[in-house]
Length: 564
Ligand code: ARG
Image (cartoon, rainbow, N blue to C red; front, side, top):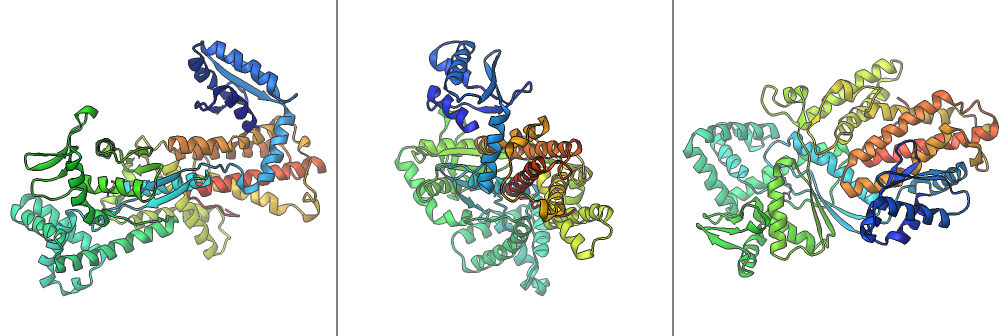
């Protein structure tokens, strides 16, 4: 249905970008196409809207639209006939689980999570992990070839600090031969605090970094030891969250390419010496120069990122690279993209810094600064599960323990992930356990609960009355039936706009609205108690809604359960 509208508008607009939106003022759908068309034709949006309207009326099949209206300053609003909507329902039921899938023929590299080895994985890395994985899923669903790359910070000066701290502590602590991740964190936190006020310690750490980068055997061995330990900790987080990467190409991977890269930039006349350092001037882009080599010859985060950019374009043939990294690195990415363009590395590749804000919360701050100052994200996750367990206990006291635990895990993790993805990633987000775990309101438990409720209706339906040979969509003619179908008809558009804006919250909020619509439908309209023809059709509606919720939540990285 939207496909047809889109196709007709395309006949007029060609390749120009326009959007079909959920309708305002109770229209079924709206479009901004007249603004785009008007600009191209050099006529006013209202005139353009008139022209598009007549065109659509002439070209659409009889009985497709029930009404087309123009709203100033040039929006076009559509209303569809019940027959059109019912036909659309049949189409989505036939499409089954591929409803909403598309064919985005693009290779998309997503850079997400990227914690720093030998440092604790922070809450910001958790956000990157959650947002990145959901974008991964959504892009894949939209038909893109997606490559997930965990660009670990595994080569920075934190290793110098850790190696120096470790060498200092080892003589008195033989048990550090086999350190735990907590040991390392303590060493790291303690030494870096002391090095801030003690220049000698600071110099020692720097010297260890240089030794490591020059290939010193002992330091390389320590590096490997710390790397493995940190990775194990990160992987535990990924496992509970269901996060996967195709590559782990951290900063160290690019180390052998850096000198060639700086030479290339210099030969191309893009980079030059300045006070002993090598910089890429970016005045034309109104940006400060990008430093790619320091005066002591050391390479930097900026150098590895430039090498990474080149690699992803050349080796992965990326059409689009998404960097899911906090707002605070906006300048770095502006410089990186400008430097990459200046070097001629970037031709048709889209480069996007998918920014996000902080997590604001008294709860979480308390949590992450507790006692030893180091708190693993696994503990935050455990806390979520523990709190969810209480919710499950209150709701389902009679379940067996193992069942309660299974549900608590899915609900707790869902709450954590959904809290992140349901808020606009650009702003700082709040973190409030009570709201996150509420069974009412815009929360994962509410969505999971709605899903379970629908599944229970289907479970309770006696086999004898389950639709045998399809159903008659014409039976779905009440306002509430049609509203639900329309909402689901919008699912493919939501996927599209989530990929166009890199906004998982579009999908999250859509699912919330769908769940609310379904719940109010169910309060007003009988399903199992309606007469047989309507009952069959409504069962199909319940089934499709449950399926859409499950698929949508799955794309966000949230599991569903049959019972809550
Ligand atoms: N390790 C970095 C940090 O924690 C994030 C890396 C993001 N990716 C990149 N290509 N720069 O700040």
